[in-house]
Image (cartoon, rainbow, N blue to C red; front, side, top):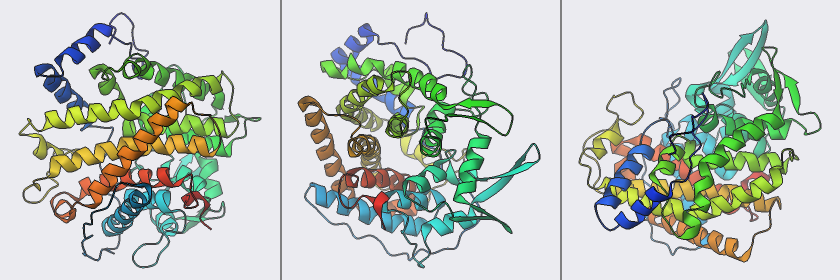
Length: 452
């Protein structure tokens, strides 16, 4: 990273391509250089805030059946990939029964998804995990951070799934609606353009994307300004523009590296690791803004370039993940560290790790990246935001096929030992596979957002 450019306080670093370091990576791939770069990459991306732990919330009924999901071997094609993803998400989310897994079933299957006891997932979440907050004498409803992890993630999921604005949300004896939740989200949102993290740590990488999706749906471009509960003015086009500029700067090297057949730099891998799901939620959020009519500040041409960037990353990120996964095999402490990831040092596993744990981790990171990327791309194609060139179509098809291969590999894996050893690792996998499921179904009649 360039050392002569200071990073603005509270903002993600703008990664400047360093051609000399990229050359080192290329020349070193056959030996120590590859191991060192790979190790640095997985240490940056396999731990920490970009993969929040499934938090502890109020106790929920144990609806698990205890039955395993029998592995099956499938050919890697579209239909089998859908089957593999749907089988995995539906089974393990119902067995885990935590809010993160359940909300991702709404993402993967739509608003009518039910738990093992027949309860609608939407009703279950809305009746258990909401809370209230008073600001300047007025009460607002929101979902507990311990449940939704990313601010406004439940709200945007409900909005995109077509949940009714009159959907009840209860907090004790008080009754709200999804409409109230949207109004509250606008009222509670705060943004300092000079210091993104002033009100919310890690805003850009961990919380803003879900808010942008929700606000792009709720706030018409003709009236993009509102006053929040603290008396502060929020100008949505400015939020979009300023945060996108930081994200563009971080991803700029992709057009100098992957486009030229080079590997992604360690600087990029370290920077993108600070963003949830490799920053693909950010991509989706800006596409959502464009879809809902936000075009100020040259958004269309900027997102044309961002789309090309993501299509290049389908290959570039996948290669980097393989490089990092191979390097991880040489770290004898890795398995134990994975078992306490995000748990504040508390051991959260039981017994010995399954022998295939590192390979399953490779599946997870590949599916997470490819699935989120294809979800954003197919969302854009569904709404005709871009027209792909032949070269871009080729990259997309290659990325799709790679995702199909990883999904059927996962479906052929016995995950019951992983459920016993470290259920959080399976919960994280559910989240990754759910986004992949929705992504590959968006352009088909199985689109979960159109569920009746």
